[in-house]
Length: 161
Image 1 (cartoon, rainbow, N blue to C red):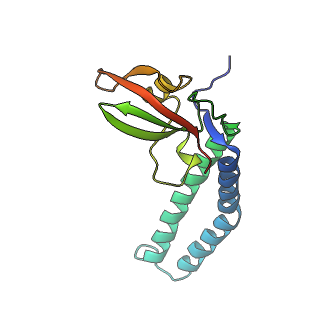
Image 2: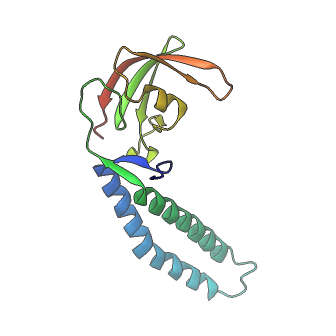
Image 3: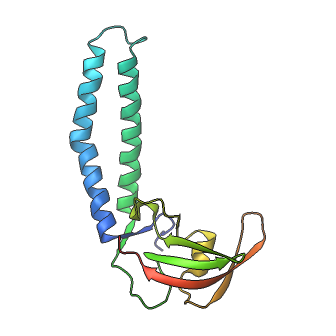
């Protein structure tokens, strides 16, 4: 049985962009941070060396991003832009009516888009509820507080960014 809990849907464009970021971080990025640390180290006393501590903190953040990208790319499901057929699937911008208000979000990985668009994984409660349904369908999902939330799918269009 294959474990799919860590899989994330990515468009080919998002996968390529993230692969390029990972290549940059693991190549020139690591070289640059090593030079910053070495230069700061040569300044002397490390206890009170702000440049050294800042460089080490930057290195830690960069290594965390490298681990995140590596795991994401290893477990990515690469998909083509979904068909514009009104069926909700990963890679689509979904508009729903929730509590009488229209809410729009991208179904998929946060890494697909650089914008401030709200993103829900297809494994999230709302993502799982709408995934595979059609425009016009009414579905519900359980909120973290245990209440059932009803949503009506108003629109589903492929994300093209």
